[in-house]
Image (cartoon, rainbow, N blue to C red; front, side, top):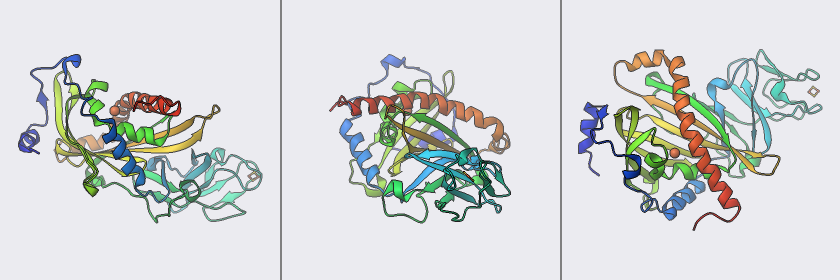
Amino acid sequence: MSTGGAGGRRRLPLSLRRHAVPWERQRPTWREARPAVIAGALKRAQARPSGNWYVVGASRDVRGDRPLARTVAGQEVVAWRDAAGRPVAGPGICPHLGAPLRDSPVRCGTLVCHWHGLALDGVPFAGWEPFPAHDDGVLLWVRLDAVGGEPPLDAPVVPRRPAPARALTAVYAGVGTCEPEDVVANRLDPWHGAWFHPYSFVDLTVAGAPDGSHGSEDGFTVDVSFKVAGRLVVPVRAVFTAPGPRTVVMRITEGEGVGSVVETHATPLGTDERGRPRTAVVEAVVAASGRPGFALARGAAPLLRPLVRAAAGRLWRDDLAYAERRWSLRSTGRFPG
Ligand code: FES
Ligand SMILES: [Fe+2]
């Protein structure tokens, strides 16, 4: 792969597209986007161990005054911070008479059931057994051995990220009617970027796709430009990998923001009243830049976060529609191929 262009990219983070190609005139990607390549990458992702760890939300949503509540594969889970600020998690059903602990307050690190005052401080009590919890600084993970059924791991497989001191972090969460594999399959199809998200991406070329023989190098290499405004774009090279069965990571390897990652985590929630699967998508953007001015951006993080989230929200409305469509076709035997 040529990296000659990348040096230029590094010196010049923003480019002006001189010859903007109309959407319908861009090169079709469907011949390269072979279903078997995507299916193969998905299958290898699903074979990787998760150790039964599930992303349940953003670290900053694990608070000291009320629990973060999530249903994972039909199991009610609550998480909060103990008196020392450590994350604790466990079933969201009070062991006394079943109150929904999601509605109970936390006082001084103790979750106090609002029905009769049973107090949980994170250790086994009255039949309530905590789940292992892991706060990686960006996301909270909970280990559910009964749900995962894999050999448990002491800690989740957390992707490599830029150092927090030079990174801007945002977490977006959405929910769709599909299974985690539909979310992962969408992310392992980089060819749809410029066609399906023309408001965000242009000039997309997949420079390398895995053939299954690369072991740890199992990733898609993509040259793409992010649209900033009008004809102003930021060209980058990004690599997509699936380090676990429910996680896809996009890492910028050349161009502005080298080392930045977008992690997409899919967590099964359970089924809706019609028996259809629901899946949460938790996406962490950990953006890094060595540029001056980025320090400023970090100071403005509370301001920028909603913007980053809004951008992710627009992409995810479309990508969730893709994942939901995939599930709908799969579940009715109409998926092509
Ligand atoms: S149901 Fe929680 S204390 Fe009674
Ligand atoms: Fe997409």
